[in-house]
Image (cartoon, rainbow, N blue to C red; front, side, top):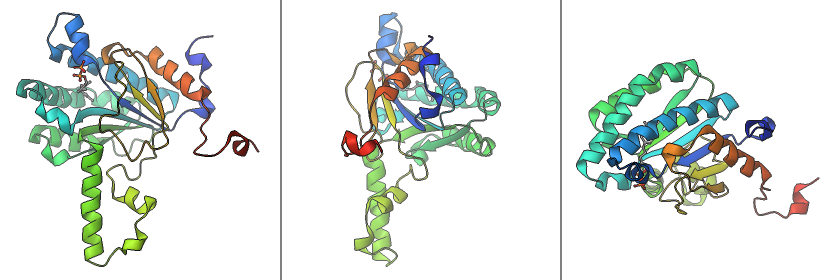
Length: 247
Ligand code: FPP
């Protein structure tokens, strides 16, 4: 049976999050500059986004630029921002054709004006699409998001809108930039690194983690199918025993 045929469409994760890693190493293997790897990485973004939407996954979150990525060489940061702008513009028909809504999380105000402007326009244009939501994590880190949430909770406590004893899991979730997005059932990281790197720390408390040695530019739809098949073989217990899960 084909890899796709082995996926149970009734038991798909609602939300898949991906740490796209290995563009630089992929480029080095080809004897090219790092930016060439990012450009190839965009082709993978397009393929995986379209396949995920067609499969019926409801949310796909991609870690496109972390808070820590700002400390990369200026020319690489600029190239990534340019790629982002170009891709958003160029792939608008792909988003519309596949009924995909674009969303973004992170410190978006820190992005260059041209990025923010295009991002806002793309979000607006796709806002009525009802298929998959593609969430780009841009200038994002989970610790940044949690700090922002804590600051706003503190202000609401100070102004009397929140009582300290009301602060619980649900309340904190409401203050995060991922509010309204279900927690990812599956987190994928490419390139063989076994780390979370400040991505969705709060939201992945119960996510299944899938690591592959494949570098992001080589992560084809078959690789996504393998991750989904692996996910579907796992038993998600949420702290309970196996016996408690079967009625
Ligand atoms: C990690 O590879 C990848 C990134 C930091 C950026 C990912 C960005 C893209 C795929 C392109 C832009 C995205 C969109 C959504 C248009 P790395 O550079 O850390 O690779 P390395 O670990 O091999 O050096």
